[in-house]
Length: 239
Image 1 (cartoon, rainbow, N blue to C red):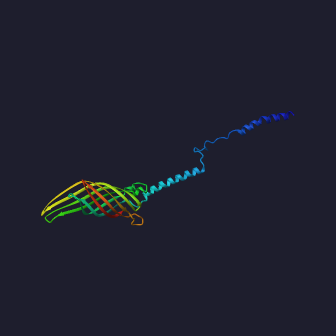
Image 2: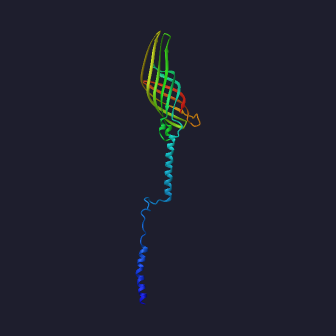
């Protein structure tokens, strides 16, 4: 009996210790813990897809500037009718001819749409006038040298309308002949150019490394107090 009481007493003392051990908090592993909040699987998937889309868009923009088959450099010849404003009043219609160098500087942008919108021209165009009789005659020639950036609204990659504004110089050469005596004069004045037109760039080669470029345009030159209007068409190549 005495031994039974001692055994019950020992059992009663050990039970609270076992209970306390079982109820103790589990150890927390700091290294296993993550700094990011536990997000739902759907949220993590959406974020990953969004990041992939951004990476693909950035890659496409880089490739648009690297893989473009054209450098955007070319030139054309153009001809048409110029209505020279005459000092005596009215206009004097004359034939005009010119050469033009074009740089599509919009290709400096990575965006594919902006690359087709901007270009600039360096142009030389001239017209000649003559008037008088066999004894007394006068002649003159106007040489228009301009640098003109342009803004294009493309309908497609190969067709669009454009507006242009530029500056330049009008080099004028005139002469008066009385029988066998001739007097020549020359001068230059500031020139303002503006106009609108239609521009096409169809591909000549299958890989689009060479394009045919053509234009139909209306251009005006403001030289001093006089306005000259040009109706012209041009054709050339673009590399």
